Length: 331
Image (cartoon, rainbow, N blue to C red; front, side, top):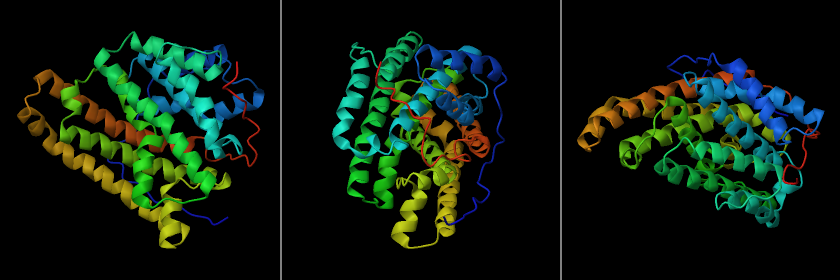
């Protein structure tokens, strides 16, 4: 397998780890056990290698213990779902199985909960989240999460057909499959704000979120590349560039690093003009303050993603045959 080196990434703000990590880790482990999401010792070791608790503590360094616990459990659930498809050599290649798998998850938001482990745990997360979030936030979050669910169908179709998408097609798909629109919604819980629709509709703030999403998608694509190559997973910016430009793996890695730097610079540029543009749009002063608070957290989040990506065993300890997988769609 061709080797490569990830260059130093453009991270203008240092990472910080949330001091509530230890207590949150215990709560996350108990929650995973409660819903049977780590049914074997191999599955438990895989979760411990991944350290989603540390990821969330890096992403949300200033969140309260209560908020960090909820966001960590959401992230743990998302990772468990992801492994069911990305690491499964059978399920991830059959589009006809998508509806059977995701139907019960969609149904949770209609108030119908089946006995599957992923569905029951999702229902618990949603019940607790809806209790602390406004109806405006809920109407924004649910479509973002369902968009992520739907991205798996496109993944399956591409895998079944053996096609590698072009870069622009890939990036459009990546925004959905990365789930970061939903994650940034959850970050609002950690920041302690409930942003209005008028702010999210503002072009400058929408562009800011997009740049944050793609900067972090590039980070993920770079560090997850060894794992995805081991599992013959082609939905990675490095793989796409390497395939279509017929360049070396190292050159493709460096191109993605340049893309990441460009997105970070876009965040910095927008940060300079955002206060004036938001003020001109007629937003209330408190909404502008909350928006700028989120922007500061976006910087910390991006730095934290790099810090976690360097330390997690998820990408460093790769199993060719994922013995940690267990069917979480069943009771």
